[in-house]
Image (cartoon, rainbow, N blue to C red; front, side, top):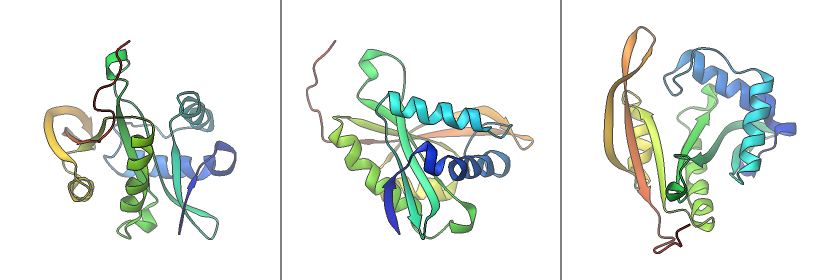
Length: 172
């Protein structure tokens, strides 16, 4: 398995399939409708415009999963904080792929002088919570009943990891 940089041209269809599985079968995304090709193209374009990475785990030319991060909030004072996401194709769950992806994403954030990475995780997603705890993320709060999916109210847990850089960024 290799960790690579993903592009819309090479990986857009596989990313769309992984997203859509998560939307229709899990609480990893609080969406109801699958994403179409235009949405995926816009997603990749926004990542490129913001200089946000999209990395993937690939084996024998097949995308097993992907990870990325982007802005946490749209305010200038939050520019050193990002929210990340990690998705793995269902047939590869439980094989350590999400761990490898997140382990590659963390130093990328440090290189971009980011200070905090945040994961917003459905509170019932024990596997994702365990992954984040294993990689040094701390629980920093849970918002109760903020989403309704699969016939019930969902709680959203926030996990954060403070990164070493920058200690004293410039304002403005």
